[in-house]
Image 1 (cartoon, rainbow, N blue to C red):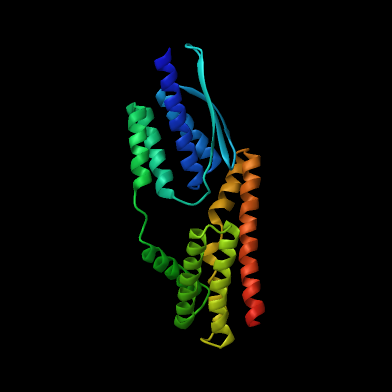
Image 2: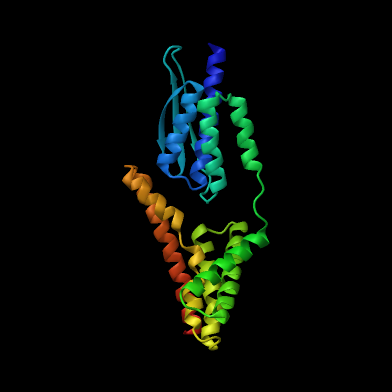
Length: 255
């Protein structure tokens, strides 16, 4: 009985870790629930699960042995890490089809968490190129694309630094939008290029909260009303922060 109870506790802790990683990496509520249930089934347990935006509540009941595990775990601040989401999804199928043990799951989670991120300069440069590409799509020329690249690069750098200094996430977005639009606005203020307004319009697109808004829609469609509303409000707050950053730069430069 004691051994079985320890196994249930180990399985519960692993499941909570999986759910926390998925939610904080940008997975939808429905996907998080399905993945956790799949892993639990592979381990031979049934679960009752409550998923909120900030916490997970899990109960495991082993009916034949009449013991259970019940615990709550807070979810770390949300970001986007599709490598983690896809890795855990692949892990869950290995548990179900190849009968992975708790130790194997734990080792795989450690491996996924230890995977290196892309170098910072690479991320900044590629996001800057994406901003320049958006500018080109909107009709900007090479000069406007260069301005959009510099503005996007500087805006993302500002957001990363603000996040490192542990500012409020919405303030991080505000600072990034302000810096990016200020740099692009300088080009319009001094009439650099033929269509400098294209650079202003596209300099903050890297901040658009696509993942929270998409997840809010999928959660609402799946019946996860509370999480859907919270994620929608989070997306609206990010959009408001972007607008305030643009407004502040516009008031300063009067462009």
